[in-house]
Image 1: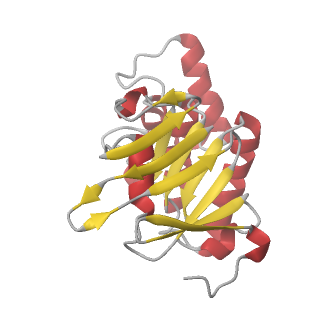
Image 2 (image 1 turned 120 degrees about the horizontal axis):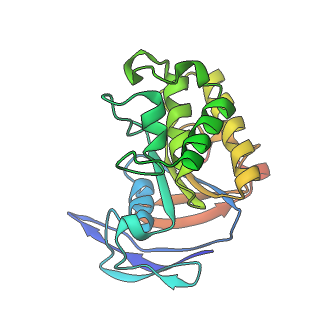
Length: 222
């Protein structure tokens, strides 16, 4: 469970104050206008930004000063953070070992993920020759192999066409259910996620304005 209490940070003239509880296994969709503080909330949970005040607890452990690498969280952003000098296999394997030192069991894990994501034929391919959807599947494969149960996603599919976005959401739901993941996801096109998320959280001016059931979501929410 994630528990956020009055988590505040001042970034230039922008100040946040978030309070939020997320149950294990929930899929949260974050919505709000550009500059409202959606990404800042993810960065605070991930540890890329440290709060000035308030508290963050994950699975009953206080995380305010914990280094990002020590938090039970994996992140995927718009640019997907893939390494162009590494192959598809290596980009996924780095989720297990940053130094790419894998034992036989771990190598099998990577191969199993490649098979699962229909990327086996791209095993040794350069990232640069992949389609947008293939690159996103590689990025998803890496965060899955990190074996962290909380996934933070910041508009990861915004550069894909609508058909591919739905394909990625279906893949994400399948992995979430199988791995029992908790997902917090900033959404570029919230209407497409109505059938996937458990609830929407609307952020405005660095604060959580309200919770919205997917069935209550409408296109005129701003």
